[in-house]
Every structure is written in structure tokens, then in C-alpha cells.
Image (cartoon, rainbow, N blue to C red; front, side, top):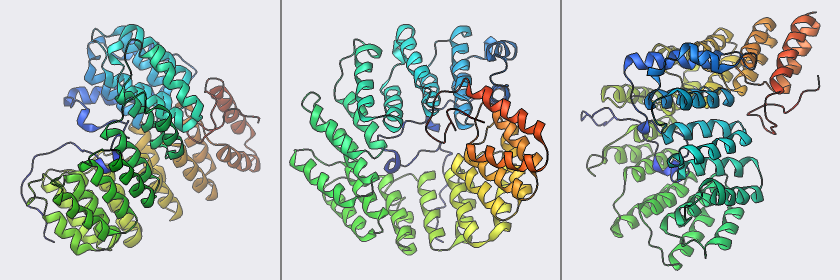
Length: 513
């Protein structure tokens, strides 16, 4: 392979703009402070203490006073602990308690990043009452922390879990109460539109646009948000129709506009149309960005045109662009789609040599390729390499690995992965628990399955009804009535403090066992 060999500096991961444009409300590593090794060790320790804390048996506040010295409570420390709790799927109340603890005991003014992370954790678990309580408290004590990002986090989750009317009502509540004294304009309007576009609710987004655009003057960013919403809905025709509407309204397309259109075609396998738009972009004196090339490399992979993907990859330096981890991941994905798994492994080594490093997308892409070609040996080898590097992948990779190990009767690796996550202070997602319990029970390892379920409940996370019913059936057959009763009591106690929920992220709102 003709790969770039120019030495590059180590860069933090930047998610490709084509994937996150205006919709990203999570946490970018580029915004993270990089703590020293000593502080990192303390972050790991405190994260484990919080995540392992028995909930709701004992108050967390007294534990924090005992184990978190005041001098540790810097913005860097608080932000990183909250980031770890978010990634670890910790109970939202625990993160909320830690943030309140930092407010009460820290001599430092809290950062907007710490506030936004806490808000994101609460809304992801649908603790909307607590989220509103937090926003209104911050409005009274630290109003400068209220940002467009915090508004976006709240509105996007309300749009996902509640109704159209609820979302508009929340927007009005923010304008009147939370962001009191701030004149709402195009930026706030864009956040509202983004909330619907994030959920691919384009009918609702169009309705809001037509209803409110006379009050808020739309800008090019407004139109790009809507264009991206149509793209995310997978409707290329709708993207092109809205693009022409954008032009008729007098808005001039920019590189973001072209990137969205190119991505829409590439995802549908229309790679030639993507290249046509690249030429149109250059003729319009709109220089292609790294996101443009990343999108096209991915599109070449979808079309299984690996030779063109290589050409685009090698053109990066010619275009005076600096490659990042996103473009490497796109090229790796293209290689795997063309079944060049060994070349993809070589590229992974290349990334390390060039100081680019690996992120969760790198591992997810490589694991997926190995599962399709090299079988359990290749997956196992990369898994152990990842563990040795103390890397914790994101939830979808964890679930994919858990499913693969269980389906291939590698329960030792399934339990090893579970134990690794628990030891690192993570509470694995409910989907991972479902897969692990099913695999263990089907092979007669019921006690191990119960132990994993208890570890989840002890950390303040519920289990699904399906998992409980499965454990119930096996425990009854084994005559383990006392074990079942204890498990049931833990569930009932936990659900006395969890908010109502209609989805899998929380589990059941009530239990009737």
C-alpha cells in the first residue's frame, strides 16, 4: 500500500464533521484537559469509588467527603471524572451528587464543560426533573455556565423521549426562566431545529421552521442543519430538493453544505455523484476540507472502489491537509469492505507509527473485519492487545464483542470482558448484560449470571424484564428460591428511586414480581 510516511504529531481525536455537524452534543476529547499521571490515577480511583458505591443503600456524599480531598477538586479533575462516569454508564444520580459535591466543597468555579456533562448524564437516563432542577439552580448561582450546548443537550433528549409539544414548551421555558435576560436569536433557533433533526424528525423540524423563521432570521447554518437532518433520514431526493430551496432563498452553499450532499450520495453507494460534487465544489472556489476527503474515502469503500480510496488517501498531503484519525478510520473501513483485512491491520500499525493512535472507531472497524474473516483467533488476539493497552471501547463495540464471544461459546472471554469493565470502574450497558446472562444461563452457569446481574444492580443500573424472567426460570428450576428473593428485593429497592422510563436505557419503570 502507498501509505503516508510523513511523521506527524500526536493529535487528539476529532470526529469527522460529516458525522457530527451541528448535532454533536457529547464530549470531544479535544475539549478535555490532559491530566498528569498522578491526577489520572486519582481520577481512576474516584471514578471506581463512585461507580462501585452501593446505590441507594448508602448516601454518596459522606463517601465523597471521606475519599476526595478538597485539593483534588480542580476543573480538570471534575471534568474528567464526569467524563468517565458518562462513558461508564454510571447511574445519573451518582454523577449529579458528585457535581453538587464539587460545587459545595471546591474553591474553584465550576466549568461549563462539567455542568454539560452532568446534564447529559441526567437526560440520557431521563432524569428530566433533576435536569431542570440543575439548570434552574445554575441559573441562580453560575449563569455563565448556561451555554448553547447545554440547551442543545436538554432539547435533544426531550425531543427524543417526549412529544413535539413538550419540546416547544421546553424551549419556551428556557427562554422565559432558565436563560432569563438573554435575547433569543438565530443561534437559539438553530438549537431547537437541531433537536428535531438529531432525532430525524424532519416533519417536526419543517413545522418549526415555517412557524418561527419570521421571528428568528435564518442563516446558512440554519439551512445546513435542516439539510443534514434530511441526509441523516437517508433521503437523497429530499436532500437535493431542500438544497435547491436553500439556493432559491438566497443562501450561498459552503464547504459544509457540499460535505453533507456528498455524504448523502456516498452512503447510498452513488460514489460517482460524490466525485461529481467534489468537482463542482472546486469549480465554485470552495476548497475541499479533510472532512470532504474522509467522506469520499468512505464512499469509495461503500462502492468497493479500493483503488480510488487509496488515491484519495494519498492525495491528502498534496492538498496540504493534515490527516487525522478519522481519515485513517475511513480508509481502514474501505479496506475491510474490500476484504483486505491484512492491509487494514498494517494500516493500524501505521497509525501507531505515525503517532495518530487508535480510538473506539478504529477498534470497532477492525473487530468487525476480523469477525468476518479471521474468526475467533483474530478477534481474540486484537481483544487481548486492546486490554493490554488499558483501552475501554464504546458501548456498541462492547456489545458487539459480547455477542460475538457468546455466540462462539467463548464464555471465558465474555466473563473476562465483563470483569475488565467492572475493574475499570464501568457499569456495562444493559444490552451487554442481556447477552452475557443469556450465554451463561444457556450453558448452566446460572450463579455467574446472577453475580453479573447483582453487580449491575449494586451500581444503580436496572436490568431488563427479559433477563429477570430468564434468571427467575433457571433459579426456580435449581431450587435457589432465596437467591431469587434477594435479587427481586434489590430490583424493587432500586426502582423506588429510579424515574419512570419507557425505554431500554433504564429498564422497566415498575416491577410486579
